[in-house]
Image (cartoon, rainbow, N blue to C red; front, side, top):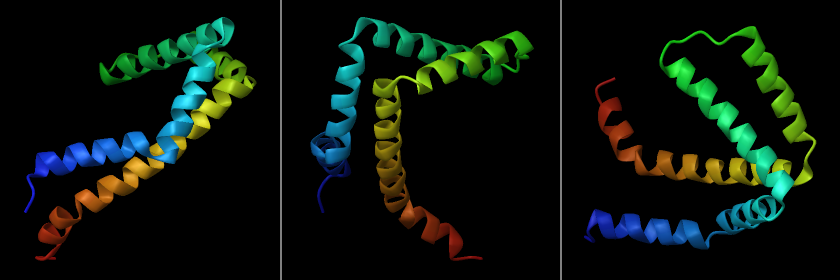
Length: 115
């Protein structure tokens, strides 16, 4: 049997060559190619990261922060390039989730034998 790491690198290569990844890369390049869209997207990502970090650290998120995040999301959703990027990211995440379920199937079967 092939080395599992070799198979993992083959999987990485397959991911990079997939239509889903190519579509995501194209959408990402479109967002990064326009300065105002890029700034809007970076602001959106920073808002997400900040709120996630607060949640992970058990810090409370203020009403002001929630309202600012809501406004940022609304603004981003109105931008067709960023919306396209988010759609393509979701498509790729679906594929990655499917692959993850396939990869972990032996573990699932092993632990479900005793049930």
